[in-house]
Image 1 (cartoon, rainbow, N blue to C red):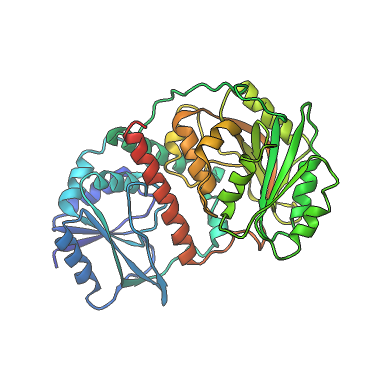
Image 2: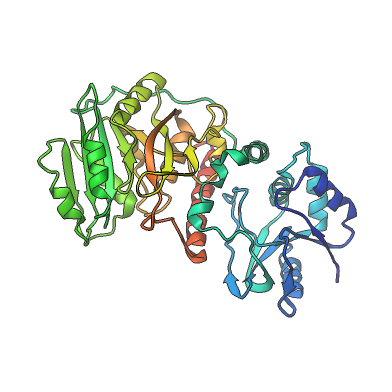
Length: 435
């Protein structure tokens, strides 16, 4: 068979990739990234190579089995720039494309060699997903989706992330998706508002946590007027009763949604377009809490001092009872003024808690989805406007059984990743068109 196999770790050096290219002397080159045994479904490899030949693909990958459990992949697209995109362990390259990509490599990475190779090969031809189960392997990382979620901000992975950012930024520069650090200015007082800030809490069936969130929001100390807008999306578990128990506080605005589809994005839009929404709309999820009574003040001060259209703060991961959890403080220091909005196309989030300049968000609006809506808006804002940062811990992000991303099955993980890749694709296309 006209293929040669090489075992290469996901975090491979450029030197290792060059060694593969130097030894690749067959039409196709198989790079296997797992440390466990690879077994093929009968004629599985032949099928993979057949599709490679039929499509002329530069790279093919397939669905597979994790032990006996199906492990489907998702389709690759322009916005699939995540360095942790899961191809499975088998990556089959057309050797001609592999060699051409390696010959163009002009940086020496310790960890990002394989990522750099994949990005460069994607410039030469299609990355084709064969949605057939063609082989068996064993996944060694058995952590839940909620545990894996924060790998890219874990300080222990910082050296890896720096290299991945460098490789992605170089790709964006080569392909016309890179944005220089030049931003539109905003006149924060161009539109009159009765209150300076609104804490926005979208919720659905959060009877265990909504009271804590409301207490946290309503107890803020500020030198300006603010309010709290809670948007309930047809809760059925007693959440509404808890909300109504706080209505004696004049700062609280309660928006009950109708029976049509809203999701988190639609709930945010209801708050943003409410006539009593403040100049700055500040996020508080219905199962989280601000870290102290000064968070709203810090948000508004940051908007004023940094002259930005959006502000991202820092949060502490905790359990339900507010005990710290690893990796601890999530400050998203990978977001830099010079390159943050380019690196944002590589990672799955821009951080929290978030605050928005309301007049801009009323033009953009949130997509009516229940996942990725905040990422979509942040990418859109970053395309044109400066995003400010606060590195003080402002927020307790509680991880518990009710989290929507805590322990997802592979179909849900794939669905979420596919949508965020699509968001990145749209954003990348807009940037390349100069919009």
